[in-house]
Image 1 (cartoon, helix red, strand yellow):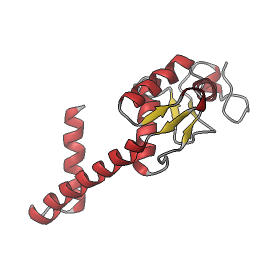
Image 2 (cartoon, helix red, strand yellow; image 1 turned 135 degrees about the horizontal axis):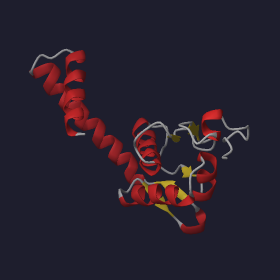
Image 3 (cartoon, rainbow, N blue to C red; image 1 turned 120 degrees about the vertical axis):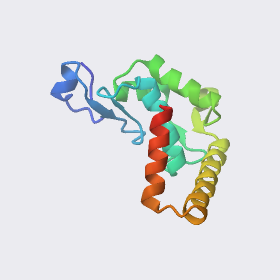
Image 4 (cartoon, rainbow, N blue to C red; image 1 turned 90 degrees about the vertical axis):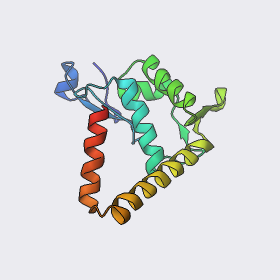
Length: 148
């Protein structure tokens, strides 16, 4: 049985090995949801990437140690270590040994590049091709779903 981040008793679903959603207390943008098909390391990776892209995590922000985050989320330390390793390979985070793990400077550049790409795409769809915002969003959703 795993403890919840607040130290309260786990929900019945998590106590029975069910699909409980656990959110990190020290890193609220990260959650692991047993109901999702994505493996926990991928959920952690995606949550950190989304946190950086949205500005919830900024350059220089310190991430919790592997063991602490693993304990909060009720996953094995190797799961968090795998997520951190993937994020480091992407240049999103930087590990400085005993000093800790931090959001890298390049993470801001990545988010900026993504925003610029979105703006260019919207300029084309809305201004040049005459799509409405709703039509553009639907087009992106369909194309993204086709890639998955």
